[in-house]
Image (cartoon, rainbow, N blue to C red; front, top):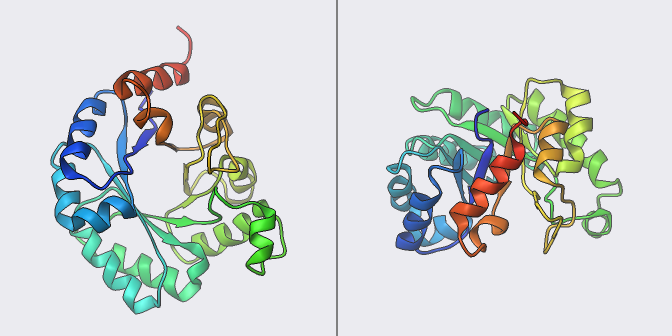
Length: 231
């Protein structure tokens, strides 16, 4: 099977990131770079990681007025990353502008609409004025994103099944909150890797269970072994 694991390398330093990515390269399907790395190293840092040959998921969660997001998408597309996130809560006009900008780029990233962050539960949503449960809000935002031309979705593992049921196999579903030992830390809606894959996830984003392991490469290899069908 193709390796569905994208390791979240959430650190600001370039040399440490490059060393970690080199070690993980045989054992993961790609690398997720987020805001901490991007703010510290910028597009040049992303390009350096990309030179190591793994697909890059650039998790910037763009959320601004349509024109600004479209411009950001065009600039990110020049980096040749495989996937890029936008916030589905940015609304239809913003999502459509992002989709149009990606489609017009020579190196088109897969756009992913972030639904509800895995660090949020129902009480957190209520504090922001969202009076529905996380799974309901995730489905509402997922429908909006897909109808506006976004390629895929980011959701907690607990929303995979309802999203697949409602939207079919078309959207790519990328899932953070993956915890092999069900250790959630600041993630409130988590699931084991094999369970998330069985539910219909396409990509599993796994960070600390790999990066904080004594030997990250061994941890990544072990998680992947646990996903492969028994011979």
